[in-house]
Image (cartoon, rainbow, N blue to C red; front, side, top):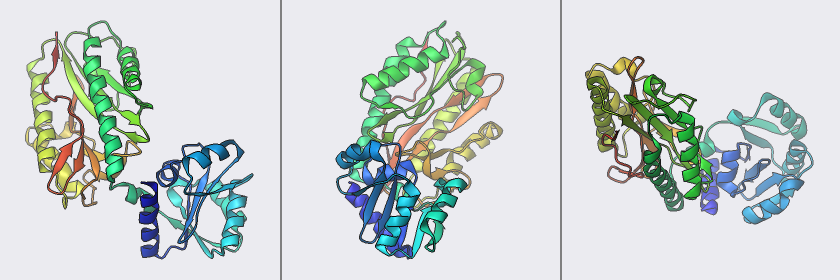
Length: 356
């Protein structure tokens, strides 16, 4: 898998006429090397693939990245400069979105007369299209989240605090094999469910609450990300109305997703349906986003999403309606784009779940 990633990167560098690329983003570093340490950079040319890290990670790097040439450094940018001169590099490209200005100044001083060329999104664009190995891991991450959701339903009851649900959900996912949660878990109940990013609080769940759970399992370097909204007690007419609209918007978008569609077109399916039912002003975020080694990746399913969807891209579909005095509903599936449409990775039911 990692060798394939390097091959794709080299093809991209050749297409863009890039002599050498310095990779500093930790996720991109892991994507190309498999190295999970917290420090190091990668230097790629047409013939060389160097992983530079310090003493703390030498053994780990040897074990995790045997296909890389390991270089131990005592000052990372000083060593980058040495290696560039050793390889005869004239122009060094770097990830402008992942290098601080202070780091850039250190790099500039270290490379001397070598020209520095900023680049953006090269590895991130490669990460959009998953291979079979990546998809297998992501299916398992989705399965873990599904199973954890099934287990947490018996814990959702009046008198329980949101953060208790969050703690238990994290425990269940780890128990099922996850490394961790994919992100700070959202458990938002009652009026707080109208907060799209309502991270779990001390609020106590009460009868009459909508309860939104947005969570995912991080497994072998890849994330899942699903949202389900359940009802604690009998729903009001308004709660039932907005749930049904969000569910239909989600299902319509998944049914429409296909290769060749842009993210903007996908976003419009959900947005137009919600707007047609009078709730467009209460759906303020994008319909979805790419998913992979990070929980938010390219492509975006948004009004500005101009990336054309391709087979083996994985995206979320997560429309929502948020009414300040009523609560909110969001329903989210992870889906992989196929040759003819798409396939949901997670299988948790999206039908109304009413907990008495």
